[in-house]
Amino acid sequence: MSQLIVTTWRWCFGGSDGYSVSAYLSFSPINGAAQTTLATCFADGYAGVGFPVYTYRPTPNGGDIPVVHGFNEYFDYPPNIWNSTLSSVTAELDLGGDLQTASFVVNVFAF
Image (cartoon, rainbow, N blue to C red; front, side, top):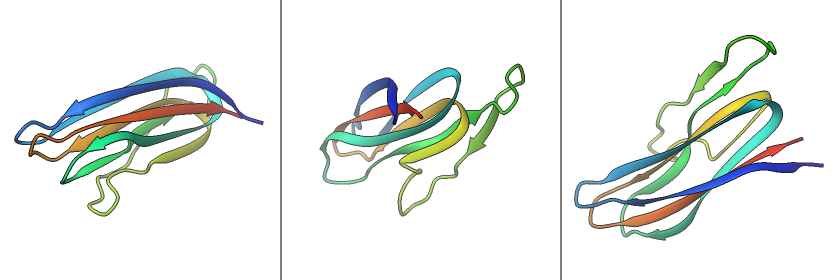
């Protein structure tokens, strides 16, 4: 059984040249998963959302270890992640120009 431990959302206006917005969520290490998705999208061009980076902490009093995902032109960044000692996530929404707007949601679940 899973439990939603944190949720948030962000909105972005792409303007004429494009824009990005991100959400950073940090928490004590959990056996957890995070997911993100577009909530609204008024765009004729590019709109992508995903996790460019997350961290995990395998040692309770140790430091966080980052996992960085490079941008992929076919799917932006991964839309969901899982780790048995997940400790933070950063979600990003990228928009092209042409006055596009969009919002995204991030959910983090503990198992």
